[in-house]
Image (cartoon, rainbow, N blue to C red):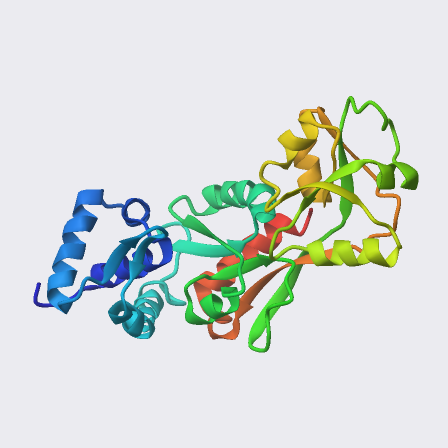
Length: 298
């Protein structure tokens, strides 16, 4: 290998983000052996291992880490050339848009958004990444296009747009032996709860409101996400607090129902965020518009 091309740059960038050769191959539309062969050639070109297998997947060496700013600059340049204001066409583009969001957002938003994209831009693909403390830096670098959720980590240099309002309700199994059609403050305090401690959510807002009300919940179980919450509530007597849009999905099969919380919990806004570097980029503008049109009627 005497020269690098954009496919090599994209491979390095994708493997840095995924830490997994199989996932990298799938995202790039390549076979796993092809990716492995390409990595071997890149290792020879740079005279460096580039990626080392660890307990947390394929981790980049310091050589790759030092090259990341240049790699991102090259990818952004090619993206601007290929998907510029004149050339970007959602009907023909096969661009991969990357969206940062919580697991709640994945349940509530992604299916609706993908269905909307399928009708308007059948070749557009999505990659969802977790909303973390690094998300602002990823937006600035162009590693992700949009962040969606309720977050306070965005500082100067970021735009935001409200998508919908959210508030918490209480989930309980439909055949709960003690709770029927409403939830009293006495029941709320007496019953055991499962608590979801998920980053990038309004969990802190919820806890503050409960503390301000002078109420102490009996937490019997803590979980890191909402992904298994429906099964927990469905098969136990535990109560769970969840955002209303998520609750509507979890209650669809009627084995779980939602009730008003007997204390005042503030509502909050779910927004989309993007960096000012990409405010005028036509692909980003288009995606923001689709997200807003899809979710603002919620």
